[in-house]
Length: 167
Figure (cartoon, rainbow, N blue to C red):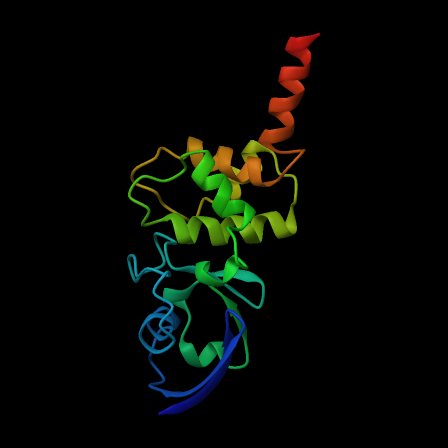
């Protein structure tokens, strides 16, 4: 057993873990953060994406011992009392169907928007390319990320279009 300490969604955890335990299993089984799904366990789908010290990682590709001392944000810790703008945009743009990929998509999008607060549609598509969705066809997911980006995203494009139509 190996001792690990990490902060998950603002709460500190100190535990003994098997050195081979994946972070996704630690999050779900030890910390009770079940909003992070186990998808493929092979880093192919991105459903288990979380923020590790602010950077998106697929938690099935990180050992819990590698996260020792880290700050981790899961989908459950993204919001603070009300929906995070990305969560709200995913809801408003109908950017989910079964919902299995949604936590990973939102966490990857949060990392994308941190680095590039006003991405183009192509930049959103490239930023999410490591996350798979088998239900939606991605269009509504891209629109949701652009909407969450604010004035330079889909909301700004829509208001510009409506202003042009009103003229």
